[in-house]
Image (cartoon, rainbow over all chains, first blue to last red; front, side, top):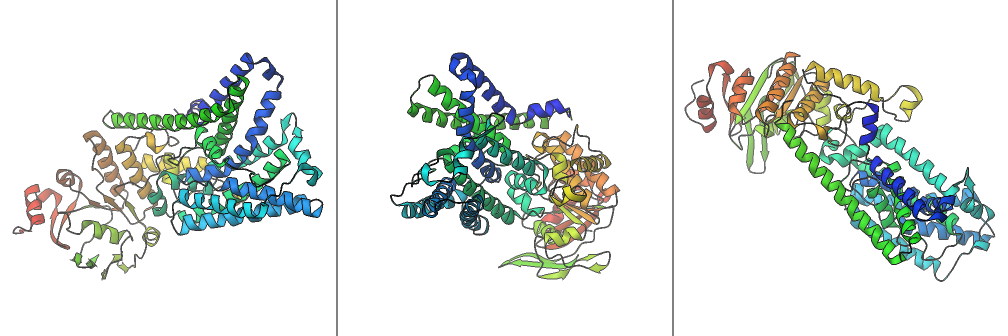
Length: 330
Length: 244
């Protein structure tokens, strides 16, 4: 029961990771072109941005919250950095980081204050800021398009670079997800998030500062969304008013598929990262099999519903088991 | 507690209730719905402030202005919903809100000292005769009686004066109730005062040392458990002639 192996087997991340490995093996068998490793590399590049954003989103979903505004924040940041570079013949890394953190924190503070202190539902608040920030973004961007030639060399270098064969973008996402998972599972702050999501009134009663934790997690997620704007720029070396459009739901899907239950209290950033890669791998596999792009989206949606349904079924089964146990010899 | 009074608008929940809880004693508080049991319990755990009245611990007047104050003074409550986080482990729940962090730099970063918490949780449970296979399984996987026992063990772990229990055996089967009753007896044996609200009269007669009947916000009768009957208690609850 307390053996290390059985504990690993019970981790919520294990089924997702197994599914991912099976899928990659199947794709490799069915599509010889995939075996060179370039396919895997493409999957990692495509999933990096979603995984990076999922690290912050996971904290919120663990607490039964959600932040849909991240795509607008990331898009705005990528445009602002690009546009600044275009107007000033270049931009430095610290300047870019400052823009990313400032814009991200501002959106996070608004979301966090409204949700944590005014007790407004996060779904509604962040749909609001999703459109609000996108609106500001549209106003600022107008018809402006930032292209690769207006961007400094380091943007393209990071975007196309790799470390030991692993794309830089994915390495960045991986580092964030590993750090976040350590925070989630090994620190008091992380523990508080799970306690809040697991039983909110109990968390308050044992003295956990629920509102402060919620606020901090929203601000952190805002900053991560801002930094994700840099990843967007690295990835595409291009920015206009549509940057980042629609990715928020992929971020939520990656979390849920990776074991961060929408009901709160469970899951980790590493799980969400695996979820992001799995989501991308499925899209890629379907593409390799010649399935149209429209169907790929439908499959991503179906997978999300499946993941939620699976979670629900497991929860129901364990409730039944406990009820049976309740009258069994102890 | 002496002459406790509390009104909610026109509702007089407590109209001069008094009781004394000794260390090592199990005291059952019974009464019909609306007799003021919950309000009394809440005022003792700091969740509700009395309009007037005096609460003393070891002869010293205390002001239980918040749940935190009551906890600091050594009073822990086990609410009916248990206040456990089902997704977290038993050890994490015992230390919920009071986590132990490592010494030094790791502690500065807020890193949890899981081994120490596991050891201490185990000791807390063993001391009350609760046997779980492991303290690192999630509370979700425990039976109802085990969950209640964990909630009580957590209260005992942190209480120095008294623990207050709200309907600890409600919705439990016979065997599960047995676990909980044993846990409560062990808690009292460790020198804590135990105050229980319950509708389960036969169990309270079996478990408690004394029984206090509350009616219309007042304590109307008091019995030694061995010297009374269910009929007598129910009579007092309903306001029939009291022969205490």
